[in-house]
Image 1: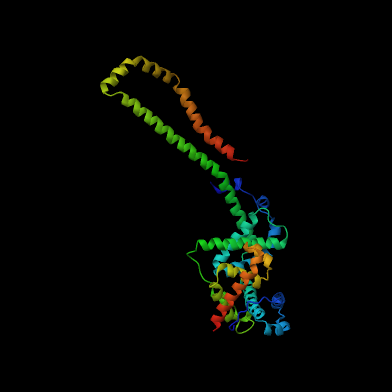
Image 2: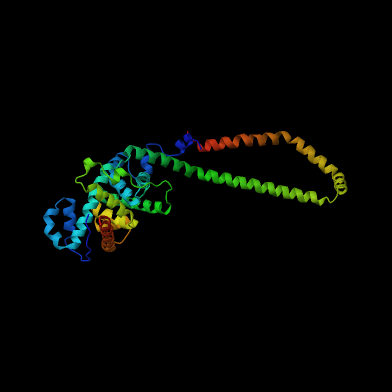
Length: 170
Length: 185
């Protein structure tokens, strides 16, 4: 392609030139192109780009419509699943954080309680003083040990089952 | 989460029509009419056919998932090219490490398809010149002169004002002409 001259003029026939390039009718406007540098530039650029467009489209290897549709469907499914699982993941996170917090609180409380017994002697004296209370509490715990264990076990079994049933449609 | 759960929670083949803005048959027709021009546009804008392949899939996926897309064919087409333009813009901000330039078969077309002896050389010059233009200039020139889009359509595709297209196109054309002139000199 030869060197092109620049012309800032705005030719009203530019659209005619583009049409001529598109439909291969450049010889019909050759006279105008010889006197209008702006249109000559448009014709040269449009001609090169049109030619390249035609060749690129001819050489393009695009996937089939079915393949693109199938990939899009798979991706939509994955995104839908991710959207659904997001609240569950969030709840699991919250539950985990709660468990950690409760454990920390319990450990802190226990530590403070142990620290109240400044010496082993003090501790034994106090235990001795509260022997009746401890014995009563132990009896009560033994009395309800079986129902408590059964309840805890039921929760451990029922909770995952309930979660499964909530997520399953069928 | 297992794939069976994904199946259960996600969309089935029949439900895809609810998720996407058009059914499969309509999509096939639309795709067959537009895929090659979109790919050519992506390839020329990115200068990388492999990236054009990836962006083509992404363009149609976003198009299918979009809500409130125009009902008439021309506007749909512009909308599709707008998605493609935005994707190229996004991809430019995160450059690929495996980017490859336009291959030889695109820079040097099959000789039996070349209309005249200078055809292949002109395409090589054009590829080099286009690579040196700004992305917006490439898009403007391709839409206006390769695809024959109107100023209004170009403005719609590139998200610009219609009134500004004329001047921007003029500047882009001058730059390309200068680059092609340099290449030929």
